[in-house]
Image (cartoon, rainbow, N blue to C red; front, side, top):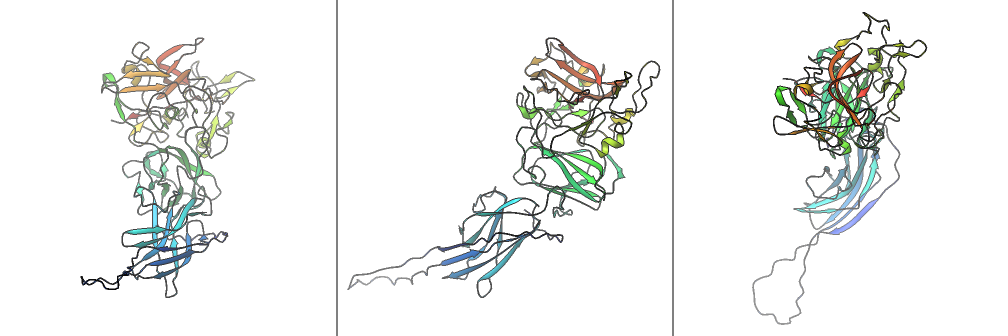
Length: 509
């Protein structure tokens, strides 16, 4: 927990709380009733009792700062330290070194009165506190109470010290950043992997957070606060690290989204080397928090082809249901029109799913979420803006730094690796043996329907994985289905660009 000065504060009213206690830390005494004791060694003077009486008043609470006042009455010693223990865990009275506990020593005046201040806290966050006394190596604690800081972590600056925050974009920038531990981080506010395309905004905001399950996170569970300063986005990951996903955005002074980034809170994905020099792939779907087969945390997130921002996946690998998030009912679903079916619109509306371009009255359409021109060229509808996703990694690629959406088609990753029904083992999807001895598991993760905008996860029946290789009105993908009426297996399938499907990232060599 960092303590940093912060100037823009809003004071909250607080209910008066008093915590007091008197503690005798140690002492001894001696009684001797023998009227005629035998001569012996001289006895030491008795050790005086150390008595401590501490009280805390109601704290003064702002968005990122808390001030405690109290009084300490100490007799029998001049070396006892008193102060306040503060923690986001509910055990500020613990000595466990693994817990995030901040002990702030007080300096009582001649009357025993003291004031201690904790700064650089996260807004809108519950903290637990108590007084403590330390005599030598021995600690004593008062009763535990709690407080909640003011403001809103989704809009207020977090007090992050940007000079000390770890730079996630130091080597390469991206639209997705992985974090695996609590702490303060920052990254350049640029368009994807192009550091030359610097963005200028007025502030940063958290759009949503999700564990990828039916459990609704409390705000700040994954990203505990964020800020924007000197061309960088700063994020605070809580010390009590929780796996999940979040979407954060840079906004202008009018609240319009300029760009957004996916924060992927997970342990580092393993690298798997596929057969026949097909490539090195992650062991999990983009957005999944584990690669362990068969559990819901392996589903991950869904993407429309060519878009950098994710949509929530299913709550189970063998059942339907969409994961909940703090952003409300997401995604927002809209029709593809000349206004909505543009790249600029998707950038400013990263939580909106755009149904495919189809005119019911005329039957015309190009099966893309990009509206553009619906006229056929040489008997087919063209693919506009093919550079949305490419083998060389575009600014719209959704994978983390060092990774990209894989190649597909007849010479793509899955075809070259020899993926087939005969080489795969069926288990809520398919498992394949890799060249390095590992096993690649592809769950039947389902996806978002491009016609209705609904989650089509139907009991682990089908899975589709995007490639970056577009063709005519569709893109190559790895697709399989266990539906008896539509059973198939195709490592070089193709599908409409507006479908919401999974992504498995390929390492950039």
